Image (cartoon, rainbow, N blue to C red; front, side, top):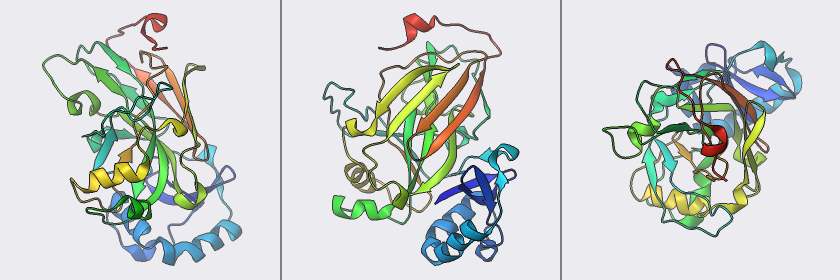
Length: 287
């Protein structure tokens, strides 16, 4: 299934270009925030599944073009982002590494990413596969790890490079709206092989990033085991798998960015720079 939040964070399912409202089916969950509703939905998913499947067959939806899709994970307790997650066609295999990205960076499909005043060397896009957890995990084995995956989504890890007077990944990755996410959360059963997904990103219609998850340096069980040995993972927590850096380029005023991952879908967002900074695309796009 493809779970979405839409408009004022109403819950729905996405099917054949239509959004089917499931607010009535989740009314008993009594969650006070969208994130808590998502977490309750994840915990009760198996119980809810028969009624959700019935809704998909019997309910009329509204065209997705007529609603505002929102980020499917509004406020995760943990937002963990991978570092150097792909071999990049060269067999690279860096040690496992992650950083915390501020959840306030998350924004919806169609939103505008406003570049801050900080004089970064450049602002980049990073198209990534996102993983959402389904249960509490601590010190899990690789054999147990995938049982804790609920589903997958898309994240653009917008990045400010070499921000003056800062160090580490957090300040360069956590500016407001530096995490466009969506368009939906696809349950694990719909993606039985997460290592054969094409990830693509276009800027103003020109493709920049185009890679496949079959080049992942460390598989998902290894990543999850690593993280669970450091911190307890809970339902609704989020992990981004890192990016293939080939094709990275600048983001600047007026850009329109489109992203797509096989079996998940496509989303777009816009770039605004009040300071009208520019970078030469040819010089600053990594081969």
